[in-house]
Amino acid sequence: MSSPTTAVLCRTLGGPELLEIVELPGPAAPGPGEVVVAVEHVGLNFHDLLVLSGEHVVRPEPPFSPGSEYAGTVTAVGPGVHAVAIGDRVAGNEEYGCARSALTVSADRITPLPDAVSTRDAVAILVAYGTAFHALVQRAAVRPGETVLVLGSSGGVGSAAVDLADLVGAHVVAAASDPDRAALALDRGARSAFGYGGDADLRAAVREHTGGAGADVVVDPVGGTVAGAALRSVAWGGRYLVVGFAGGEIPSVRLNIPLVKGSSVVGVFFGEFVRRRRALHERNMATVFGWAAAGRLRPLVHDVLPLTDAARAYRLLADRAAVGKVVLSVAG
Image 1 (tube, rainbow, N blue to C red):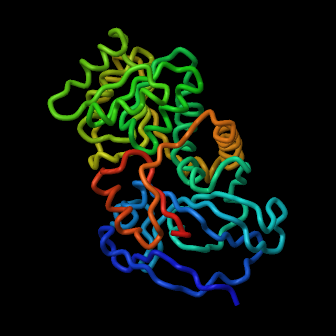
Image 2: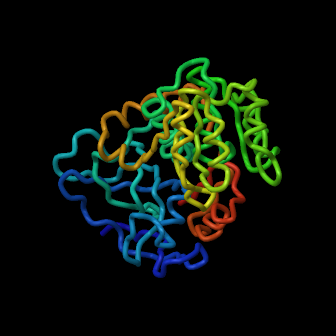
């Protein structure tokens, strides 16, 4: 009989304070094409809060575990699984269900980890850097020398976009809700940075930081009230990447703006991309994890908290108090 599984459980939709820590029976023997993973770290994402509150397009019926990103070690493999073996270190992401000490997943949804990448770093990389890489490379086709404006640059996806845009040779302008948060990106490859909170004029700041040319690419995981000014700050022929709405409000787009700028508004739906283009996603992550193993990128981690402190960890996200990624450690 397998050991019991410690799990974070949502019995009632709502905020993080409703989460419980429970002991459940351990996973059964994996079926065909499945593996069991002993989870070591769980990465938290804004996506999780929407699932917990019932506001996401994916709406599981309680009870369920939150968590969409995990890393650990394979402990059992089912019939027909040949790509991974017991003892392999892997990472993966699901819509929910990862905040537990062991889980059963489809073998074709896991990503092998290089020896030099820890499971802690893996859960700070997989979704955030996977999203940012797909956004910059597949959706924006960013070119060396282009100017990339990153909104929410101190968040998980934002800090990843700063790192990756710099690695591909772009000129990075980082923007965050206050100047101190924005300034963190200067040590991560950004050429300049500014805060857009309060009475700050985002359009004027972008003109100043781009010499009046505007941004060739805008990476926007924030949405909300800054989106309109950011869209107007796109250069002629530029690309505005819609990554998410961490600001809490889904903005409306005035279509005359991309018309007169000859620009594009481009959606970035990482989860659907992974489902539809799994092989390409795996190539993306091989590149990103390779850079991490070589020390060319380092994920920004706000804190690592025990799995049993999941409610407090998710509250950091809900209150927008985190700078970078929040991670749960199963070992405590």
